[in-house]
Amino acid sequence: MNRVCIDGNNLTLEDVINVSRIFYEVKIDNTAIKKIEDSRNLVEKFLEEEKIVYGVTTGFGELCNVFISKDKTETLQRNLIKSHACGVGNPLDIEIVRAIMLLRANSLAKGYSGIRLSTLNTLVEMINKKVHPIIPEKGSLGASGDLAPLAHMVLPMIGEGEAYYNGKIFSGKEAMKLAEIDTIDLAAKEGLALINGTQIMTAIAALSIYDSIELLKTSDIISCLTIQALNGIVEAYDEKVHNLRAHNGQRDCAYNLRKLLEGSKMASHQGEIRVQDAYSLRCIPQVHGASKDAVNYIKKVLEIEINSATDNPLIFAEEEEAISAGNFHGQPIALSMDFLGIALSEIANISERRIERMVNPNLSGLAPFLIEKSGLNSGFMLVQYSAASLVSENKVLSHPASVDSIPSSANQEDHVSMGTIAARKARTILNNVRKVLAMELLCACQAIDLRGKNGLSKGTEIVYNLVRNEIPKLTEDKVMYEYINKCESIIESGVIVKEVEKTIGTLR
Image 1: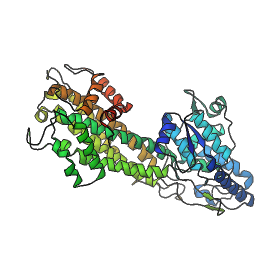
Image 2: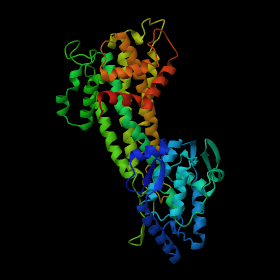
Image 3: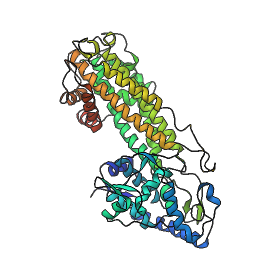
């Protein structure tokens, strides 16, 4: 059985993908159980002593000075979940919901949240039996964590809300019953422990960064088809050039281009056709490479965040302390996701410029708009329009969410991260970039045919053939969106990187 063990410290990005997309099961590691139980025991002690502990014997936010007696703590936690379930908008994808549940469970497994082991087991059982709460995408300020959407995650646990089960939507209570999972009565601190964290933004970010790594390799591959379609000059990618600047991403991209173009008879050398290329070809390592460096930085931030305790207060069993602090604040993710959006937008920006160079006869030397009987046929004219539209949309979406803040809870929570908005924006940009690259791929294969396909490199001929197995060379106008969608599906499937690396070795 494929399974991921969680202990709060060792979860990997690959684990997140396996649980969210391949439906690996989850198990709490035995090493984590004692810490979870010790933390819970301390909460019980505080409760018995009626010690003032935020969210245990007090209200929430601005109501933190309202004392709650121990006989009302269970009502307090249930009310918290019900009142905080204020999410709106479309439901998050099931893969994101599974990632959210996994990340929240992993954070709780660290043993600093004061939750009962039985409650954590309920959450894990929901993952394993595929009870997926319906979580609206909007409503989080990114501090105190992702309160509103995480409350929707908890609703089915207490027999409320809605959930997907076996491909259908049921009430939370019915979904749990069908899956044979007992609903729970939240004990002191548990509602707060389940919703006070960054797991919505982090789940979206984790899936997005994983996809971005793959997409950046794909962008290198597709750009090499365009380079050959336009007889691009290979000396611009010489290792000597890039060692003089020494940014890792730039050097990695140049390495990829050299590897991908090796043996090409369609690429040219300096002075054969022209002295130098336009920036959209010549500066691919500098542009793609900078985005690679950004993605690598963001990946490190996420690897820390997915193994962090992000709720409040934190329970330190050994010291017998409950400390109210701010680990729920999503600023590290907010800044990273704004950065990711910008980094990915640049990939689409330069890709659209390469599309323009192919469809413009004054720049390509090919038939206008990549169709031989132009005038009667418009060819790929509107492909460039559509790419330009997506690129322009990305520019709007790249405005940082993290520079905004709106005070909440009567100004007790007076600076928030907007990290979940940043993460959702970055994911939208990612999807737009994939579409633009699909358009470049479509155009590049057509341009190669018009140029007279003669000696594509081994690494790129594989990709050309993947496209041509699905899409013929265009000799007259066709319904183009179907071809764009097919190219996007090829990219999204991961087959491009997989087949290229199988043939020429691992790309960076």
